[in-house]
Image (cartoon, rainbow, N blue to C red; front, side, top):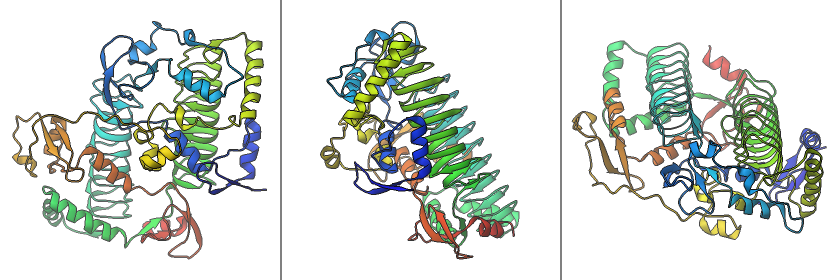
Length: 550
């Protein structure tokens, strides 16, 4: 029987389904007190993706790039030193005090254990990238893997020479693309696959030399879904390539045309018994978004390769099983309430930045160890006995079974991903006792200039430019690699900052929320991320496939 509960944060009603109860019983936790959105909010509040700071390494004294601003209340070590044997996290171990709450003691431990400055491994010349690895010559990138010459992008895998792209895989020479795969020289495209030399396309596959097209398959030289000759196509394209004004006009024309074409209710590829959006090769994944290869999961976001997982958020939860309330990590087994810990973590609970370990409870920064509580090592029997006693203590205080509260996040709410998904004001944060950051990264001090819209007029000797964003009115840098990219693609210089371009790109995504609608063709009920108020024509999967492959 489905149980109805009231969220302890937003006070909204939410459901706990029968299969949820079975999962909670299996892993030994009580049902959650918070609704799925607010559980997601807490995990997202522990993730800073878009703020990089210059600060000093507290071990070496060197200037480093870090996710943590100067003045944070805990030591921060550069990557090489943090991973070295020069320090031992168990030196910070302490006994558990049964007269105090667990989270109060955990937060106190957070303030003394050194933190890893940034997650960026095995990369070359990619200092301003986070939650990333195996990259070369990348800048201001988040969740990049195996990429080269990628700038101002997030969640790109095995891609090269791309700028302002998101959720794009195995692609090259792309600009302002979203949810694209195996594309080459594509600009302003969304949900396209195997497309080449195309602009302003949506949901196209195996297309070449297409402009403003929606839902095409295996086409070439099309403008707004109509076939044209090569000469006509080339002449039309020249109108919209060099000028920002013409690009904005193309956006308006494309958006108007897109609304006249059918949209699939959800992107669900090779998946069975799933609900959500952008789900691939999965089975029994409910209320999941941006997910690949999930099996028997619910409320997972930006997740890969999970079996039996609930409430997970982080790009790259690779090959994990039996996980609950996890932010960040891969190769996890039987882990619960985890903050950015990965690489072979087994039978662990309430851990922060722990790696290659087993049987940890309430630990921070542990590497390659076992049977630790609050960073103190115990004999195996004593470990299990103490762990069970602490869990009973947490049940009495109402703490056990819930993710870390906001005050345990190492970031201010406004620094975190939560502000993007669940924006609040400083006053609202104060009313809920949610931490807020007052630190601001210094702005560029170089002379502000206004280069021409036409990239061909830019002086070849320019290394970088400082220009003013047309939206935020704040200065931002144009680096040489960007200028080279725009020259190569014959695109105009953007007048909006990377942050504004990112925010506008994210607005093109559908919300991570399901609505009930009626298929615009067969009129059967469907579940979709298009709200009933949106103007898009939305088809069920069967009607959609019939429309694009007719």
